[in-house]
Length: 286
Image (cartoon, rainbow, N blue to C red; front, side, top):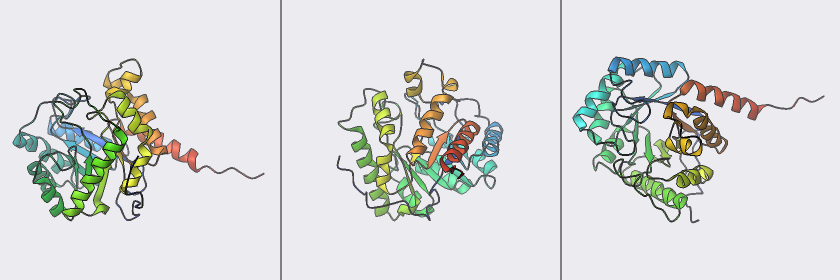
């Protein structure tokens, strides 16, 4: 491999240094792969977000457009109508609220409503104006890798070396951000498990997740309830993939991953508490 940026480390001043930070999913959509339609009503979405906070989430990720494989594009105005009331209802109650969007207009509306993180599956590449919105806002930006787009990404994804290519893409997006005066201390990178990847690609990225520390920014890992878990087991539906979600998250944490995007907050928080306690236990001397 020719991975670069290995001379850099995450600064202790970075808001997501250390961890684990649990990011709870609030899908305000009718068609998300796991919980689509459950929280399309703003009041239900706000109540769900508050429940996730009570379970230990420190970040709430609010999205109004499903990005599951094959999902249809949502009109930007409709996306704004979905997410803004929910963000307004959660603002001031959550330490961090991220807007899960690839559209600059939605990002700007969400930030005005009280969001303080931008989480973009296109790493600020889908909308030409999104880099400017992020630069002006001076909030943390989560950059994700995706091959293709949600409509086409699972149609025969191909890589010569998936770890190398995802790393290089994220490095390039970091450099674009820095060119536009978005400081490295505000960036987080996500290898995009399940976004334009086969089962083998996902496993290789997870197996080598520690290599992404070379980017010098915190790593976000989103494996919660994803289809690769069912493919490795008995093709369980999303709600029955919690054990596999926990296994992948705990492996990621053992490799130094800092942020975990999850649907099932309480079980992940408990698992991390036990893992950390075991990791920090000291032997008693006789």
